[in-house]
Length: 313
Image 1 (cartoon, rainbow, N blue to C red):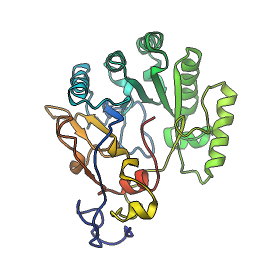
Image 2 (image 1 turned 45 degrees about the vertical axis):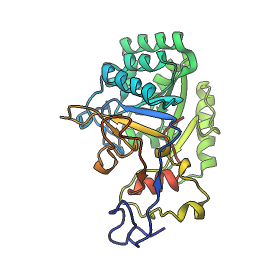
Image 3 (image 1 turned 120 degrees about the vertical axis):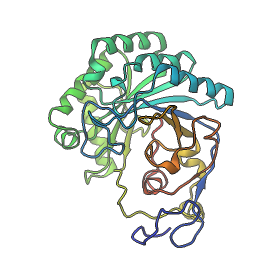
Image 4 (image 1 turned 90 degrees about the vertical axis):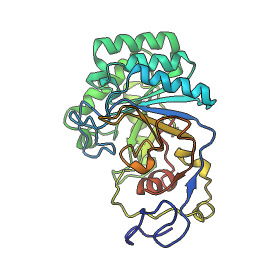
């Protein structure tokens, strides 16, 4: 693994700056197909890896028809994932969100929706749709709520003044209506993981939320995304050094569908973190996307290999 300060790092998909073979991840045993519903969001975070905001429509809204076509491809390609994920932007800003979620649930998939649980989710039409889905599919549907920190002041340094109370209000509505929730937080506050999970446990207890702070699948703590961070390149030798397998990395088992502004068709992306990097655009079909991925970006090292993180449940 090589220090990122050396010129030429993350520039060649086959070799590192030091001339070693770059690690690659073969695709196999697909577990999650993600859909990015669009980059528009009701808020603008201090550090959003996908640059979502009220004005960024670089990734435009997917439609129910487009999602359905990819669900058809899942069956044609025999991927058999356990989960369909929806992310944004804020998914509930997409007018087709309830219908797209229903499409996936009706085909028998578990569905995970990433949301800030704020105003877009709390609109009466969306609430009515979520209640219908809850009644029909129960815990096949999970909403992962972005709670960047268990303290309101630190959460609001990322998401803006008043955002914590609005998110908690949305979570209370979900809880009171029996809709399953998990939480995503960030690990940028100078506290240990033990301290962070203890803080989230207190938050959940205060509000009666049935979420485990100790279960990493229910309270996911993500490292910060910084493309300029000093991180090593991952070589083929790193698997043995780190005692990891390529199968452990997110792009071994997931893909994400996006639609770029102005594009005629959606594209399949290797990584949920990298929708704007052409090298990680694998083509328009799931068949096109059944190929290996070079770990040729700082996020590959910091988030997936060294950070051991995954966007899936």
